[in-house]
Image 1 (cartoon, rainbow, N blue to C red):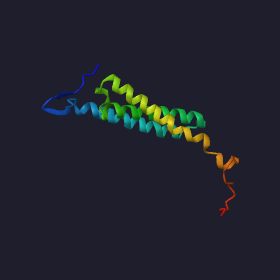
Image 2: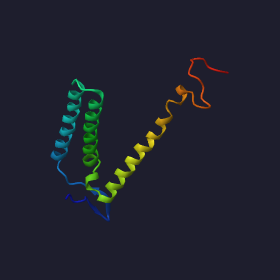
Image 3: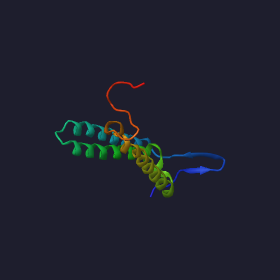
Image 4: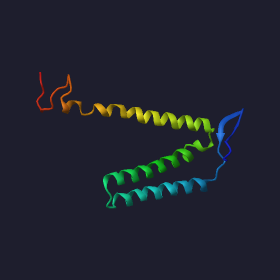
Length: 120
């Protein structure tokens, strides 16, 4: 378990006492994951397999960046869970409009036809 940063009443800013070497290792891990994405991009894999692999590597990169460079690893577990739940909710809520994305092409009620001509 990692200790939270020290916060003093007279000095409200958190003091992170981690060594620069730790952040250098994390940075190198992120660079290796980015290189892995290039390797995955040039392999002959189907679309679904490529998407799944790229998504997993991107999630790992984002997780490292959030946990260490934004110091979420030092926060309380409840706050970390709250951030995770809200992030997932926002991402799912952003997907709500995709079901209506083909409305103009399928001729749904009150839609204008996609003929390339602007109607008056």
